[in-house]
Image (cartoon, rainbow, N blue to C red; front, side, top):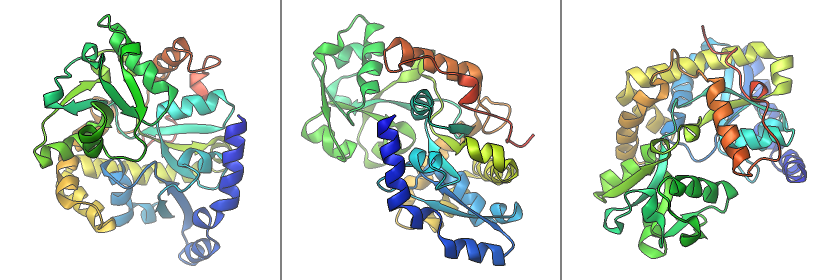
Length: 330
């Protein structure tokens, strides 16, 4: 909790200008629009396409909103949303679960992708085709306790020992550089890094989390807000999700056009990667759900129980308070 409080205080001091610019607010009022900010979890990519579609096609304006989409700084999206310095953010079920346990008032309001598309990737020549093959190999991660727990959980399915896997922190090094330098495998989202491997002509093996445990089929990424926003300004959340849902639905139905809109909004992105990634990811936004964004309590409870059983949580999660479907379009 101290860590969270320190980060929140830092966000208040360091990122006030980025997230609540008074000039933006004044300009929005002149246009008759309400200014809100959504903070990404990372640099722009196809996980975020629906937001950019909603902005570029005017869906947010139709809902009376002037929306700034910004990248996280020293303080991430969770911290900014929790502190009330941004109305919305992008996070993951894992992060929100940990935050809720620590009393942080952040809430998931929509699942951007219905099923977990992440897994452990390795160059084909490493011959890592199942969790048992993680033994005597080097894993490159970012230093979070959940990584070893996930590796252990998968390896136990095949009677393998996680203590025989070397785990190092690869920092900001990208997957393609790291596997040629000092690691054998890493945790990636196939929809971006896996697709990039295809475009590079670099063959990889994937060990998907969902192939080994339904409890690891959690929502990542998700859209978030905070409890105060839910209490004080529910209408803005409804309008925001109405436009965002329309944006993701458009990306589902028109992946090529949606990719063009993302490229237009973020011209530094590799167009070929965006196009290929969008084609792969668009069907997975809604997948088998009744509507885009829908979340199930069972998914929240399954993953929280897995985290608790693996000693990643100090207490059990009250899952009903961690997410809501109430603001999604009917």
